[in-house]
Image 1: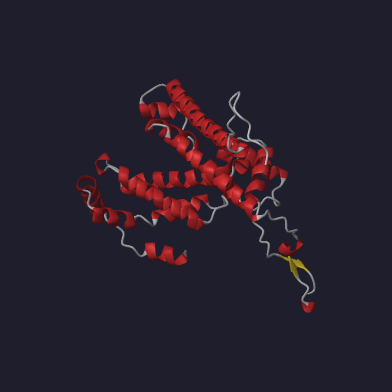
Image 2 (image 1 turned 90 degrees about the vertical axis):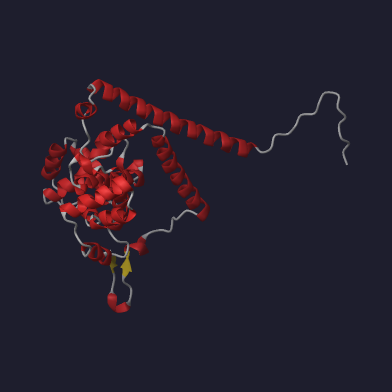
Length: 305
């Protein structure tokens, strides 16, 4: 990772005139070389955005990888005639790609399904850093109360999410004591019972997790572009857009945005429900085995051998 960061920071930065020239060449002529120059010159932007999400339980390298995908997506939609720089436009796509990946990667058990839980998931680590609070065990009741007031949630929500986000931070190689002179030092790993599931259970869990992620993606795909954008801006950003803000953006009423949002959520719910029903029917059919054909009335019965 260090070598990669050094390499992208060594890439030349474009002047405003160069950026506009390459952007025009790509947008109007499909010049692939110009697109390459534009993207590589802005690779350094991705780690800057990705670092804002450190502490969310995902390696920085994964965040950067998803951010790079967002950077490429922004190139496809960038219009230099709109009057703003590419970095300004790309930053939003980078951030959206990282947020989307975080939501898909974290289990619903960890972050919950409500809007408040998602907002808390994305903002808690940042708020704790700004307030100088490290870890969960060092927070006082007063610290928790201040965080709760700042993020507009209950103190219990702060404690619960802090514990979830901090899970697994302690290395299993952490020493637990013992006498180093006689070689009887131990680690946390030595104190854990081996409760690993068998390989079949692990494979089933991975397949189920993969199936759920795929069905959510497919359900998101049944929406039209406006529905996807509204849901993304309402639920997949650190600072969700209000109904009023989206209404101003689309030139409609806030009630119309609410209706579009509700319709989109219902469409996704129906798609996922249908997928679950189809999966259950397939499983039941497989468990029942092949259907045996009934004998016609009056047909001869085979003799026993």
